[in-house]
Image 1 (tube, helix red, strand yellow):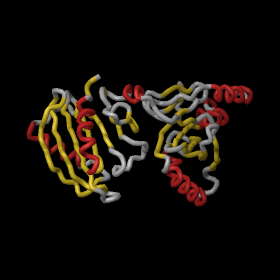
Image 2 (cartoon, rainbow, N blue to C red; image 1 turned 180 degrees about the vertical axis):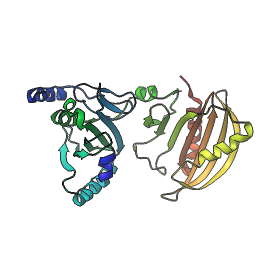
Image 3 (spheres, rainbow, N blue to C red; image 1 turned 60 degrees about the vertical axis):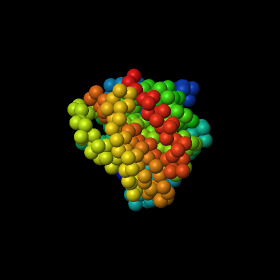
Image 4 (cartoon, rainbow, N blue to C red; image 1 turned 120 degrees about the vertical axis):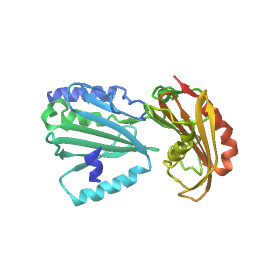
Length: 315
């Protein structure tokens, strides 16, 4: 898939660094399961999940996708490479962990001039790790080919992320997880939780909980809260035949809030679902807590969801 590619010192020194890289522990951007030993003089970026050269416009971005994405991605890449042979090259890789994947590499044109781009995709269990490296031709001596290639060989996918790391990345505290676990966290504004073994959550099998926070400079009037809650509910995908069964104002942790209880069907399987949405109106912020489960499991989860909700507060 060409869109996927286009959008994601002396030789002795490089050989020595390669040996050092394999001896070093990988660094993981906050809340990511994908880690790497970056090339020399690369530091953690304060603005994106990855690394950048400490004084040059060279970026290394890391991300993760569900494991099942890998096969489809690989198929699309193979088909597109046949349509444009020679523009981009592909290299199959196997990491020390046994994880397998591929690297795409080639030169692209940009407004700033030619950029040599690497895109690596590797699957390990339920995670597809993605690494994208962009090296402008004008500064390529600061990220030599062999150094970047050796760095990619150190990609590692860890089995879990410590809860403490997830919690540290959020702008709010979760004092009681009520038995749920993190699936992923968007540092600074969002968390996804579930119960069960799968990270690629099927709602009919596992509950799905989403907590997001966003700026809201002006507090809405009481009569506006129902409309805001219903508009935010409309942003929730994967549901169909959505019907609000209860709507009411309340207070949560001394803040004005609004609750919607919902009956719906799973858009994929047509199974009956129950969901709840709490909107909390804070000082300059709005928080949305949305949870959905199989209807048969609702009575078990509802008190625990309230327990989770009541444990969310300021840091």
